Amino acid sequence: MIFEKKRLLKFLILFFAAIFVLHGVACYFSLYWRIWWFDGVLHFLGGSWLGFFMIWLSSFSLDISLPRARAFFVLAIILGMSALGGVLWEFHEFLFDYFIAKEGHYLFTQLGVADTMSDLFFDLIGGLAAGLVFLKKRNKNEPK
Image 1 (cartoon, rainbow, N blue to C red):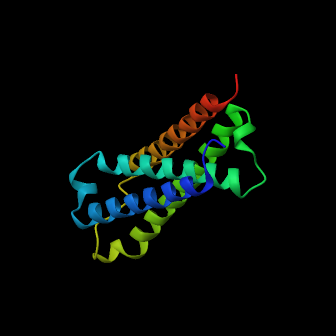
Image 2 (tube, rainbow, N blue to C red):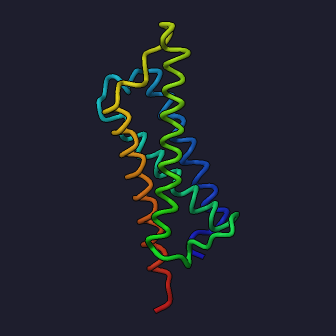
Image 3 (cartoon, rainbow, N blue to C red):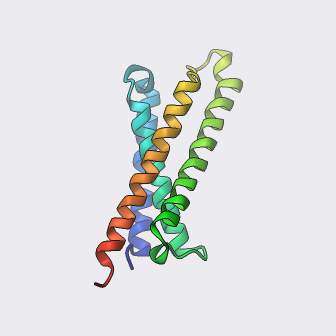
């Protein structure tokens, strides 16, 4: 097995916790507005997490066998999950701005179309990175 079930699950939990903490610190210290590239890093990490989650889900819970699937299919599945997660997060940001930030309690999270496209780009690049890590480990473990 390329990834052990419990080991990958532990990695996913720790990775998620790290992203959660980084996001909390970024919100508290306004890092998203002070450091122009910080949002991209978090979206890259989120896309990577979603990619690894899809690997775990498909390998151990769904009836999809990524360890034996063609590389294009693996990347399509992982990028699809990263794209879906990114779009849902952008809806979250829009709804937060519409219902909460417009009341003046918080800073706006949606800075325009360019920000949204950048966020989705980094989500996809993060998912691609997870997929390439998976494919590299898979190719390394294949019998010759």
